[in-house]
Amino acid sequence: MKRKLFDKALDFEINVIGYKNEGESIVFFLKADGKAVYAGLVDCYEDGEENVALTLLKNEKMDSFNFVCWTHPHADHTIGMDRIISEFCDNKTLFWIPPFISKDVEACPSAAQSAYKEIFEALESKKRNKMRIREASDAKILERFECCGNISIHPYIFEIRSFAPDTTLLGELKVQERFNMGNVYSIGLVINIGHFYVVLAGDVENRTIKCIPDFNFNIKERIDYIKIPHHASQGSSYLIDRFNELGIASPALATTTVLRLHNLPD
Image (cartoon, rainbow, N blue to C red; front, side):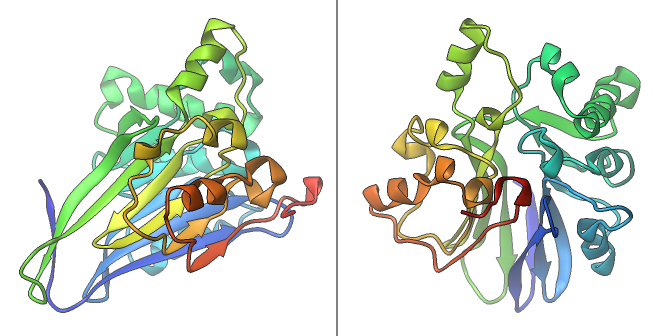
């Protein structure tokens, strides 16, 4: 298991980025004694020349992301992702995407098609060292390592798990040939560092939330922070109810992003 070392301080910083009318991107850093040693990105958006995620990365004097998760290929989570793949991913980058149907790519918005083109090129044998591309689904560990320091005898475990999309629901859609690139594909994440829990729920909707087995969440007592799914729409409102049913305390802090075309957040 790989390790991150620190002396006196280990910090986890999360930046949730929303834009005026639409767009969502999340950047997080693991910092050892004030210096970023690990950078993660969940989704991407840029408005013209403004890409706040890249500004944050450069401010921390990092050249690439260690972890990237593209939750689903809707434009408000995707614009600028092709640039991320081509310029800010390297052979140390672990890149996670939802299970996709190749025929659906043609139905994606142009920004998603550009991102998929970069992914397909990276998958070619001559570019396999570009980054490591994996498909995420429910109950899968996406990242895990130890953080060791002088302030504690025992290391802190840093782990990222996916709780969505639901493979059973996706399997039913495949059998029925009801292919689409909607929110049913959206990846949901739980980040655990020590005894702290962060939930990044992408655009996971109620139809998926109702299918998720209890063990997929695997949160001990409480959530410290949640990025509310799908811009706080009624179609994604059941997630907190599930946590309450499992006896998991509601989050101390919750945020969402804007999608003005659909008058969200609701």
